[in-house]
Amino acid sequence: MTLFFPTHSETGTPVTSTVMGMTTSASVPVESEGAIDVGAVTDRLVEANERYAAAFADPGMDARPVLEVAVVACMDARLDLHAALGLKLGDCHTIRNAGGVVTDDVIRSLTISQRKLGTRSVVLIHHTGCGLEAITEDFRTELEMEVGQRPAWAVEAFRDVDQDVRQSMQRVRTSPFLLHTDDVRGFVFDVRTGALREIAPA
Image (cartoon, rainbow, N blue to C red; front, side, top):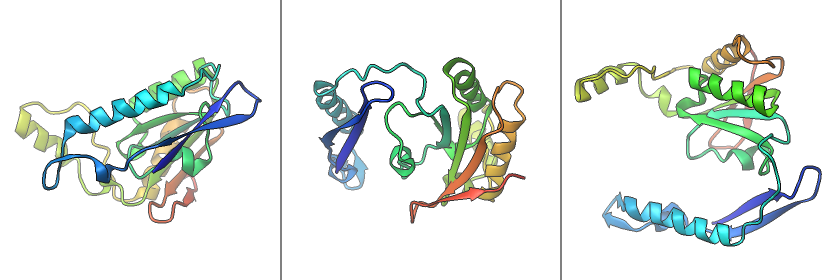
């Protein structure tokens, strides 16, 4: 697998890309049949960083996203946001969690993103085949039975991905902490085709 790491030398200047070869997860050592050696995975990431750092050049950027956009998306490993959206290093803020749902902590990140780092647009991305469609809020009860403590957070499980995108858009648009809520758009990413489908707000 070949990864491209785009870098901005400074805003408005040409973009260059550092190319790095990397193995896929299929080549990760296993302890036994079907079990990944967890320590080896972390070691591989550290080794990859050493190669990356050896060729790294300070891009001379500050923390403000060039495109003034924040993207909220699911943590699903099948979503390569930068590739799917044509983004480069420094273009945006990416905020990811299970489901890509807008929680209090996402609002916290968006508030800092807008008020302190200059973003104005918000893009929300859910996807097909999300794991949150396969569980329910009963997961919290299961955890309580196992560890003796009920989580304070909600699972945010859902059955209708389109409706959950609409709910996330509404949570952003009605937050009193955000400065900019006029450009909030929601999408569902198809993990089989790579295409985005825009969801109309409620």
